[in-house]
Amino acid sequence: MKILFLHGLESKPGGTKAKFLEKAGHTVFNPFLPKHSLEESIAIAQRVVEKESPDIVVGSSRGGAIATTIDTKGARLILIAPAWKLYGVMPLIDSNTTVLHCLKDDTVPFEHTVELASKANITVELASKANITIIECGTCHRMSDELALKALLDAVQV
Image (cartoon, rainbow, N blue to C red; front, side):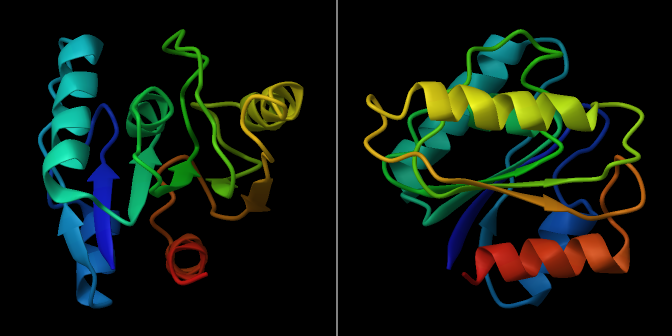
């Protein structure tokens, strides 16, 4: 499976989750997303989608915000504690989006994911048939504990 992994603000390429997916046998594209410019990060992500045609786009925190703004060209979205609201982006959610989020997240409130799912329901006519799956997992915002990583791998392999 070809996966575009978009890292969070304080992360970088080659982080725990991206390496975990690679170790599981997936081809992972994990570009550097500069902290200083959300717009530049969005452009970088879109270029990788255009060039590599991933099957899945995984976005973690700030990377989740970025993932909700790009045209995935049909790739499935998996969002990990997506910080869409903190970055003020208008999310573009298509069908079969999965969101992994920890109830105890003290960086991106779990309620933001609930709101994201409700926004997808509002745009159901535009998105054909939006189907958001929310999986509560993990012990903190980093989502790199064993159960969160297992949930990520399960979501990728659906």
